[in-house]
Every structure is written in C-alpha cells, then in structure tokens.
Image (tube, rainbow, N blue to C red):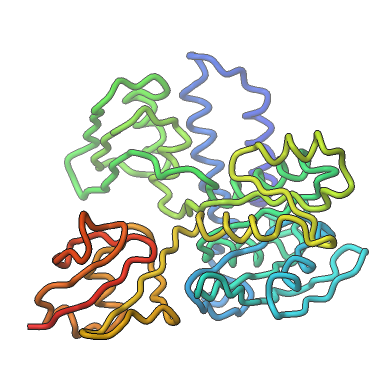
Length: 364
C-alpha cells in the first residue's frame, strides 16, 4: 500500500470515528500517523535532488507575496494591473503554467508578487503542479488567496484544506507549547494552565507514535492534539493570509457587502479596476512594513529614499540595514516621529521605531 492509499485510509477512519472522550486517544494516534505520512509525501526520503522541488524564482525586494487560487479567477490580470509585468490572460483555464514574478512599487517599497499556476483539488498529493506551487508559497511573507466572488465559499474551503494538509497555517499564531527532545530521562509533562483538549496520556501516545521517549513538554495555553503534532513536526509555516474576492461586478451589492465584512478580506474587480488601492493598503498592513527616513547633521531629512523595515524594529535593526559596522561605533540616535515622546528624542539601540520616523545616528 502506497503513501496516498495510507493517507486516504486514515482520513476515512477519522471521518467514521465518533468524537468523544473514549475515542480521543485513538483519534490522536491517527492524526499523528496522518501528519507523518503527509510529511513523507512532501519531502521524499530518496535521492538528494527530489527534495524541495519548486519554481526557480530568486527572492528579491522588501517582501514576497504569493498569489494562490484556482484556475481562471483573475490572478494574471491582477499581476498585470498592479505591476509592470505582463502575464498571459485568457478566459480558459490553466493559462499560466509556471511562476511569473512581478514587482509592486508602493510607499517606496518593492514588493515581489508571484503569479503561481492555478491549484486544483488534490494539489497536496502532487496533482497538477500543486507541490511546486506549495513549495513557493511556504517561502512567502504573505499569501493572497484569490477567489471568484460567484463561487467563493466552495473555492475558499478547498484551498484552505489543501494548504492545511501541507503544513501551511493561515492567520494562526504559533501554538503556545514548549517542546524539547532529550537523550534520557523519560517524558516530563507540565502545563501552566488548565487543559480541556488533551491530557498527559494523550501527549505520551502522540510522542510514542513519533518514536520519542525522552522529551520535555510544557503547555502554556489550552492547545489541541493537532497543535501538539504541529509543534513536534517542526515543519509548519504560519503565514498571514489575505482573501481577495474578484469579479464583484458579477454579483449583487448585498453579496459584495457580505464578503467585504469578512475578516482579512478585500473585494475587487480586476477588469474594472475597482478597489485595488484598498487591496494595496491591506497588503502593506498585513506585511507589517514601515518606512524609516534618515537625516544627516545640519541637513533636511531624505524623504525620497526610505529604509523599509518590519514593524517592531529597533534602532539597532536600522543601523544594521544602513551598514553592519555602525553598531560598533554607535553613540546615540536622534529620532523625530510617532515613536517618541518629544521631537527630537535622544535614544539608544533598543528604541522601537514606527512608520515614517526620521532618524539621525550619532557616532562615537
């Protein structure tokens, strides 16, 4: 029996098993086996060249955004509209057969947008070019799931299921579980809160399925068995995701209003160029990018050339971005902007900067 057959058999058994207190250990064991087989499917254990197949696209710019969706939802039209890259568009399915990169210039930042081939159902098992699409998606800073507004619910459910199956967790924080494998001493289990979804026995059952008999496990929040499996596997990617509903000119205004009010969602029409400004604003916000401007002593700030940083970056991060040798000769910095109590404020390396702050670095 191949891996695909084993996965299908376990999924059928999980589906027909009643979920109650008596079956939770059995279900935990099945979920651990399922996670192991899916990992084997995505990362073959054979020759060296088999692992990590994907599209050979060099990461560039300040951030990378992966555009995922079913065929003919308007991904190529969006790429051509937002960037200077022309991706082939047509009304038939599978127009795009490889990964086409483009660059969005927004707020002084260069954001790499990847138009990936359309995903089909069963992509997680390698159907179509699903495995390569997913390999690229795992390297992105933000995933945009593009949906057809006329059949969005079905498409969204299927795409989330495919990405979940390959270890991509969308808009979910990392589980609050500390896990460390040891060489001896057995399994030490502890929890800093009351647990309602797992207990010590279930944790041991799952660890034994992974052939782990010596480890320290601390639950810092009330997590599920699935979240424990994610922590043990250590190959899960937690990414922010923006749901873009295209073709809103083909549905009623009530349906547009309903879709627009869903969390992390934007409604657009690529052909009529509707609401694309708000899409760029949401993309910037979810990438958590900020602009920092530099100032030389006795001169005006340079507002034409911003340093693009991530939110919650410190003065030290700014120094490393300008030049890695600056930290060694850093004395203090003068900062103007929203991160300060008054302007200019004299700060040290640990000071956290905010969007559109102006910074002047003073050396020793």
